Length: 201
Image (cartoon, rainbow, N blue to C red; front, side, top):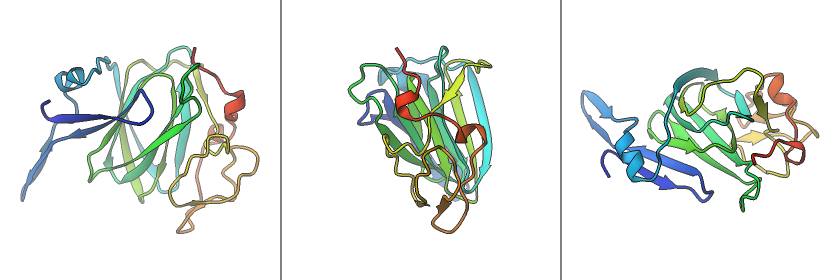
């Protein structure tokens, strides 16, 4: 291995990526992606697009996926902190419907690779977060779908989030522990529960 350490997560198809960070009083340098190191870890994905978003505290984006053109995603945070989650939607998977989460921050430089076949989302924990990710397929209009972020059948433990399940993906009544209201798009408050969600064949 070189500059990047790859560690499999308990759910097959998910990996934590930890680059070496070289720092001194001037600042730091790190390789955020190294194809050779990835290949040595058995990851031979080809990325076709880089995306970046900014979100404020309390924003939850997800849980998203593309149905016919699934995307593998390598995600990281360059400012602030988020709790990043993947949910297994692969037919026949022994971990179908299970989730795994990682806290990604600008300070820990940790990355999370999510293979095709998962729903993905994140909750912003800091005042502001800038989120970067590489994807293995392009965005296809009309192919995006999603999964309810708060489905009790999945049971994601979002850190610091308080509220009671209202029977839908609505953000109403949910806040962070400091009182910040949960903030979701209209679309993300309408995704179905796991029992009605798309399954990757």
